Length: 143
Length: 157
Image (tube, each protein chain N blue to C red):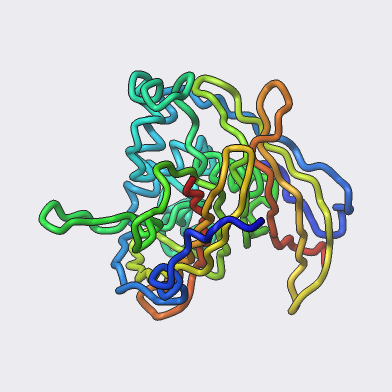
């Protein structure tokens, strides 16, 4: 894990470190097993092409989980991810990088917690934002 | 001119109706498999002693992991996110996922999930008319605490 980030040290508008994961067919198979989603368009090329897709596509829920990992790795041991939401607006093809980004939109204190809201998204190597969303985390204070 | 609605009174009657509770297990192997698929390197998802050292009861479930329903080949099962009515359209897309986490979920937990259709909306997009079905699942742990709420949108078109 990286160094702990603190509430006082982050600003609205700031981008957090990005996360890139190549969604190989092996990763999609691991995801199918890990999530229990065995829909064949994600790992069977013939099946995917018979439904009219150019090839296998990355699971939407895997992109959601990668956005969750982006936030988990940013908030560190003492932070907590409270909400991860995204929409699946475009497809990501097998064997392509899924690149996850986040930008802070709001800082607030609610019920004794240091809340940070973020705009998060996953994009293709060509820069198409296929998966826009929002995240909410809490961060520790330097006190 | 407005098209005729595909939402029938029967479909509308399902809105807000809670499903029967489903039992969901969270176990260590499932947590590791999930974390590995997402590419996590944080040892809290793999090493139980390490996780305990960080204040967790056991391996915590990574974001997006809400355990696994107990599979039985003798009972027909339908994923919780499939609505309880026949789709007016042929095709389906996953529209989005929104999960709120209230309490840590850890290996060893037994969760109870209830699902309802929260909303039905019609829209016309570039791919034609579509029905957006918002499902909402609430997860409680063995102590009766609500630990997470999942909202998913299915696009039928």
